[in-house]
Image 1: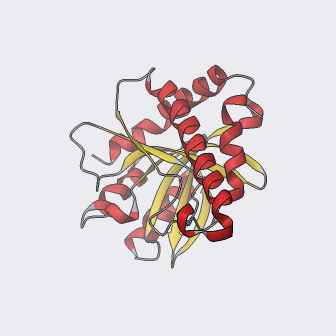
Image 2: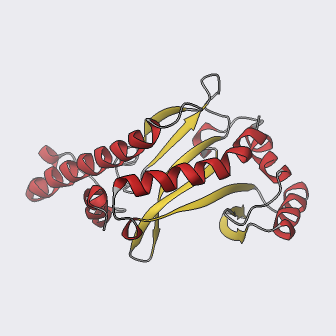
Amino acid sequence: MLQEAQAIQHYLQYLGQKYIAPHKALDEEEFMLQFKKDGGKARNQFKKMVEAFNDQQNLLKMQRVSNWMNQAQFGTPLFYCFFREEKDEVSYPGMAVRLYLEGQRLGLTWEVSVLERTLAKDSLVRQHRVLRVPADDAMYYLAYSQGEPFIYSGTEDNRIFLKNAVDAGEVRKVLVKSLIGFFDEFQTLDDLIESMNQHFERLFPYYLATK
């Protein structure tokens, strides 16, 4: 496990855990204090990781890192951070780096996506312009149909299928994603940042297509 990701890995134990203000938590006060401490530490570690990447690029502006709990006060250890052009509205698709969990393995992905809570009338129209760009074997599609996620490899057949499915109203939203790698695959933070750069460059044309 990459040393710079240990606090993030540790915070996974709080996934879906309800947070209660310590002074209201009665006999769980100490647990909630630790919950908050671990959440802040993990978020800060993820932020530093993303900032290390951001220091090496000037194409997009780094946005705020997601919080360690959501508005319903449940632990949200799978942090993400969007990158956008200065003039972009929050309802526009952006490039986001996101923690990714597969079994017990934790890693990072890049994606071109838009947040549900920021959707505007034209958000999904803009998002689906990614389907105009030829598929690349370094990426994959994450499609949502009737509320369920489906993964499709980055092939031309799948791109055309998804484009037709969107046009027919059978698929509501399609993201383009690329797996940067799992933390156990990297020896140093520099190795991780190098992979972040490579996958950013591969996915950047899909972001530009949403303009």
